[in-house]
Length: 412
Image 1 (tube, rainbow, N blue to C red):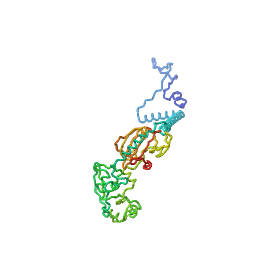
Image 2: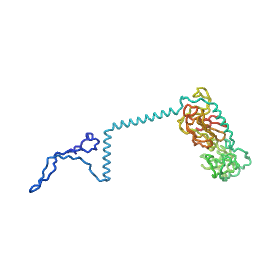
Image 3: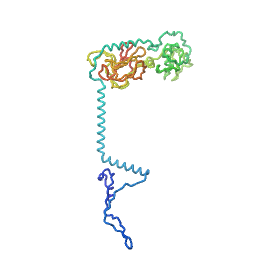
């Protein structure tokens, strides 16, 4: 029969598009019976006429089995279509991937060209503006509110160390921080000569995180907490920290010279190392750009990229794409924000111990004058405003109003 023949045909030989149209079938050997009445019985005649019928969809009730059969049929049809057109599909897919890759590569190349230093024409340098910024830095350096020096010593009246009795065990009292308290002020209030003592005893990671209402342990004498490491002994500890063995035993009220790993002992008169102290004070400089960048112009004399003459470069340059976040290199207060033909959009931050930092050529400034900032604070976004040859950050460090090489203070 034609139906069976059509079904048994190979899929590729069927001319019906998509195998979804229902074919028409014509029967010429089938005669519709017609009943004729006779005297004795009914006689069946077969009139000479052709009957045409269309193959219809078999109606089934919705059931899990029916759904699975339908899904299987759709998968079979899809598989057949893919197998017949696999070459065309692969070619189309390759063309799409290639086009996308070329587009992405072109976009990145354009962005790279736009966002890295190149030979462009910019404004001439205005020396008067450089002088104005230097005067600003000198003004900021006159801040005398700092209560401690860079070694953690409390400024003010000298403490008579001879009055400290080191033969008595160290004792502690609790102090609740008041609004307006500073770590230096608290140390001075309790007769301590170095803020290392409060930082170490209270495990303070950043003194600027100390808040009103916080309770601090105040030891009776200056010193730091030391956690005994593997292989350490009392003799090695006293030798390393230049202490007397009997003093260390008395201050810690030790009944045995045997120490255990992880045991905490108090080292009288010892202070934190410079890096640990500066980190706790938020005074340890860190790179103001945390994203990927490249150094382009170092501090010192160089050939000016625009004038092509030898000139002194007051900072260091970090080239990176426009819009890259710029962070404060050290905790402090925003002293000035401005715009000039030299620095473009720039920000100046004042820090403890007479330091100031300048961030220039920003595309956008994100802070305001008088705002307190930490090393996680975004000051602005990288740009190419002012006297510049492309998107980069110009970073300058001042100490008491005088320019210093940023690389001597930056922690990479």
